[in-house]
Amino acid sequence: MITVHHLNNSRSQRVLWLLEELGLEYEIKHYKRDPKTGRAPSSLKLVHPLGRSPVVTFRDKVIAETGAIIEYIIREHGSGRLIPPAGSDAYDNYIHFLHYGEGSAMLPQLLLLYTSYLGDAAAPILPIIHQELKAHFDYMEYHLTGHTYFTGDELSGADIQMVFPLEAAKKHGRLLGYDACIDFVNRMQARPAYLRALKRGGHYDYGPAS
Image (cartoon, rainbow, N blue to C red; front, side):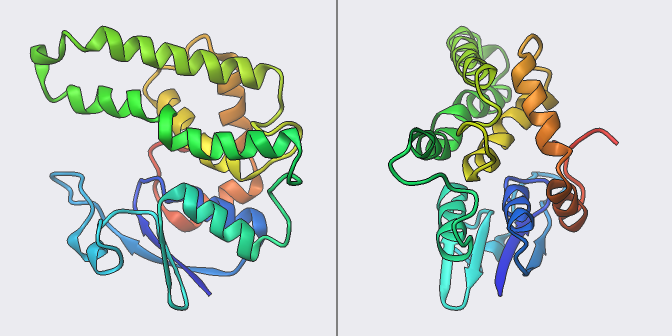
């Protein structure tokens, strides 16, 4: 059975959603953030040297990084579900957005978070960060305006990857005017599998408003 090493209020919520969409059995080992620093507990380093979540274990395998976890679960346990046919345009979009979600889309949001601790010292770089944010939101909005999902007309693992950058942006009020992006988040958060994962994973700041 797959074990998800799940840090509260984190990206690992996506892995629970993926497993629920596939109808797979899994267990959760819960970890709590330090209430003062918000950091993951050191006990996660006993699972993987980076000490971060998500991490999944299956028999003797230890797999970290959300994109790698999504690829592994779909490949080894998905029975052909949540992945477009190889060689199709949808598959090319699948690979692109599976990597884009963490490789590009999250970077300016993380930079905005980290520079928020610098006060006035961050002023010189803030215009560049905001330009990057706009470029990425414009890109995602343009793509979703012509597609139901990031790969086309069917849900895939890429959508599960992409929901977090947009959830984080929506939470912080950065999606004003990006109607297709907001609609995507709302539709994903209304899916029964998403809601089941939310119930099992516990409180999640970026989830749907109660």
